[in-house]
Length: 104
Image: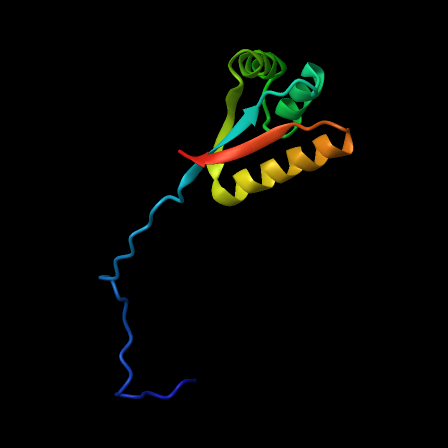
């Protein structure tokens, strides 16, 4: 059993206020090039960015026509990880596919 100590006060502190903010978000951009195959781009969009096959094909065509497109919006660390995965996989397969990120 614990001993009573009159100098120790027990209770709940209810007036602590912490401001919780969402992390800043970043757009992951996919850039068009003349060497990466359309099929490879669609596969990347499905595997890394969890796009449906139809959404991936539409985005691939949009990037092909306009030069750049948004793959997704993520917190910094997740965006950076996805870019690293895409870059490594593209290089392993001999493609210069480029992805970047910008603040949202």
